[in-house]
Length: 126
Image 1 (cartoon, rainbow, N blue to C red):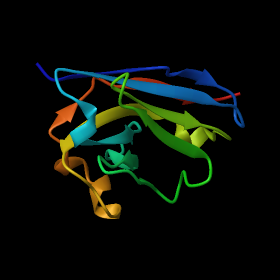
Image 2 (image 1 turned 120 degrees about the horizontal axis):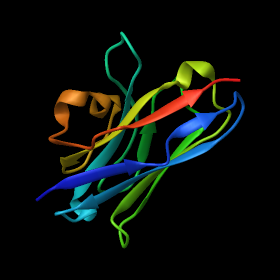
Image 3 (image 1 turned 90 degrees about the horizontal axis):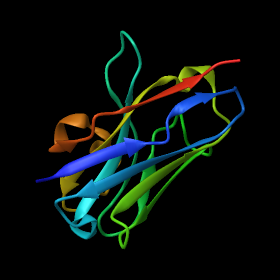
């Protein structure tokens, strides 16, 4: 059974940091692209970043230079290090998996991902 479980969300002050984790089970990360998405109240879900199955990563312009995605295939876990957090980063963050590689910004489209976690809340506020 494919399962993705996010953790690491919480409350952070503006300028602070959080690290999100996405633990996968029921499949091997090696052959999957893993994406991070977020959804703020009243807004559509948007792509934040992905790490491709063949290496390489991509970031939305809104987080470029502040967020870093990484994967540990041995632990079947993907991380999202979030630094210099802003109030506009407040959202529920989801990780998602799709089979195969990704090469472009198009892979930040939620509809391309077959498997989703339940989400973790990130709130940035003073």
